[in-house]
Length: 555
Image 1 (tube, one colour):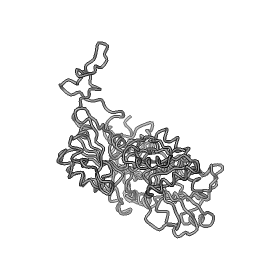
Image 2 (cartoon, helix red, strand yellow):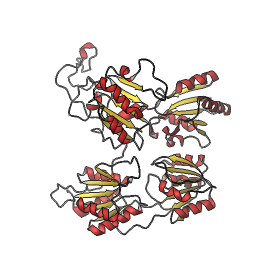
Image 3 (cartoon, helix red, strand yellow):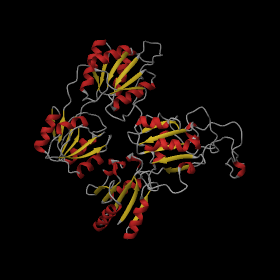
Image 4 (cartoon, helix red, strand yellow):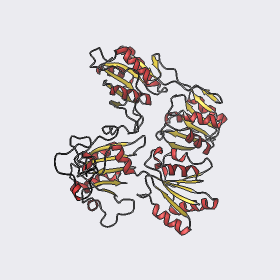
């Protein structure tokens, strides 16, 4: 029996190393450190594995779980976020296991500071700027810092500083580091790196505290301070010995080593661009897939024809983001409107407005005031209110309206669907027939199931629900896309006897239907509401073609 201390990485499940993934999939016991370990990683555990959240367990209870696993003959996957070598509390566990005579092994993972730097598109060790990286934290509720490791002392060299576990103490960091780096020193704070809800705030020591407070970042973040941050994406060039064309070489063209090989003085040579071009916008995670391109690009206002003016996308879906990205690339004036119900939405490129319009009249006023040429309703198929407002406002103003709604799902062979017209009927079907349902209906649909004292629910949604819930439930906060294997493992582990979902369509969450089909789990499927009359397409390509046909193209 062996305990594997596994670095689960910063959050994205696909950043787990191959070794780590293999071990998680075969260990009979999995101990994980709370919500900082993604559910998709946990879902790869064997269906029969004992999976325990140790976030609030004292060390003695954790060791007791490991001892019980030893008695069962289970190997243990002990999951920590990031890499176990930094701020993981592995040392005390290893010491306790040594006293028990239990074998252990450490499996490295992607550390948070590396994920944050990747998201920012920066190198933390830039030649002639900083060649050292300081990993540190501040004291507080955690263990006090040793003598001489206070922030001003540790960072006195001015090297790149990465401060962990300190997002809630940003004002203190600013106060202690401003005398060292200067008020104009650039700072970046990255929260929930590599996750769908990644948040990045960039500023200087003079303003970063206010910016972080406004962003709502309080935990699961790193603070990066250093002059390396103002060298990327600016107009200054860097001289790197590695890539310099005039670095010393021998007769065979090989780079010379030693004191004589130092980069000569002179005009700086621009460093080559990073793979993929310029750094991406901080508001769009690097893993965002490129939008699909139609055979003919949408028109540009500068093509000499009657091109479109401002186009409003009513968004909140993957299709809306892809379309906005495509239109922004084509040089169109596009504004995406989000309802504001999600605290950390995935933002598209281009201008974004958040919040309601004030009903059909308010939307009609906004269309006139902003000289909108077309409205594309790419909201969720169950967003009845905004779709109705869009149809009415378009009718009042004469602005062309296109609805972009992905096709609904259709039952496949071996599916057992119980089709219901609304959420109330879904709740009634569950109460009559099932005891361990899995709800994937969005947080606003949960009220229909409130008060049920018989069922034991597994509820999955993007953000914590605010209303009443069933008496017995397990809440999983996660955002798709999901894989069939993880969905199957999740349903099997919780002995789900019914899947309850809305017929939203699309590929991002379709895996749950395939998993239910394979496990022969009935699906309570809520049918889509009747949408107001409007010209409708089902793909981003078709929406782009609609723009071309209506406003012309560059070709």
